[in-house]
Image 1: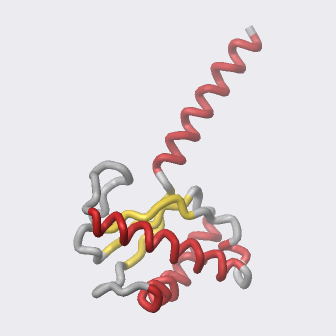
Image 2: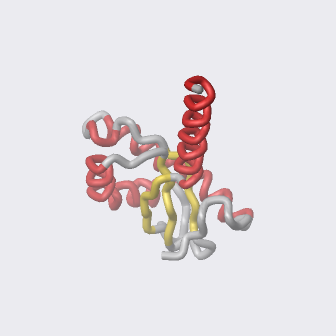
Length: 123
């Protein structure tokens, strides 16, 4: 699946609207499902990026612990069915769950700043 890296390309206006709608539906459905499955409780949807043909969509999450990844794999089809019920799309995109690269980069910067701060404070 060749979903562009988040923020690497400017999406078409329709794709941007679909991304926003998918973000809303997936976040709401995960919140609803978290009541019955604890593994989905602490997931935060940070964004969605669809391919231009809307066949595939990457759902970006702040983090994906192993237990949550397992739960997401089990409920992927149900999430896609919810999207099909709530949105008028010719084709419901296949969802793929990924850790948001912006969060990962931010964590690296934060760790580097903490190391610098410790060095300055210690010496």
